[in-house]
Length: 227
Ligand SMILES: Nc1ncnc2c1ncn2[C@@H]1O[C@H](COP(=O)(O)OP(=O)(O)OP(=O)(O)O)[C@@H](O)[C@H]1O
Ligand SMILES: [Mg+2]
Image (tube, rainbow, N blue to C red):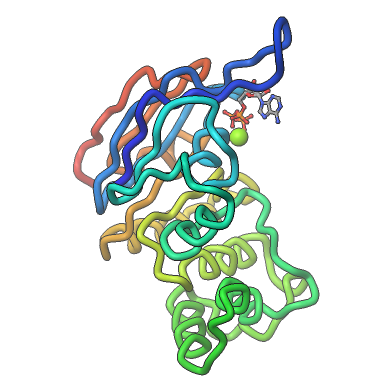
């Protein structure tokens, strides 16, 4: 479904040049749940940003369902991403003036697809993740874990084929974090493909595989015991 070939990302020039990614290759199949681990600065966020189309690679190739992404222009990339890839950030990036439901509906609004069917779908997702009674609250009336769940609901509203998450539990205590991980387990069981960056080994153990990055290179990919 997703294929990276020899992906490199360099920042800066000459002496100051940093290789954030230095020849990363791997494939992701439908239904995979991969945790990306590695020390700070090893290139985890850069990797996710390139897959998600938020950043451009310096060299290499990225394919999504056979379609080459790295040669698309901005508009084409946005169109592909919008339909297929969702992104959950460490910072939730919710709009403070909108309710939970309105935040979840933002991608639909941006895509110009407003309509009752979508609102019902958004409500359904919010109910599924335990926020049915909170959907008319604004972000500052929600806990960190609840805000992250709204951000995840927003990421799912377009029925993505691939969900990317950068430290989705990074800002929360263990209990809240586990709720998010339970939700990811459930989504993965339903067939959602997930790539999650995490520093936390307990979180990574919930995934089916762990990819380790070091200095911008993939050092290993380990299948985990069946959960
Ligand atoms: N915009 C940028 N300009 C220059 N260097 C950058 C830029 N973004 C990232 N880097 C560098 O690229 C390397 C990889 O960064 P990246 O953010 O991918 O690391 P990370 O593994 O996500 O780290 P962390 O665990 O701290 O989030 C780092 O050395 C970083 O300093
Ligand atoms: Mg990072």
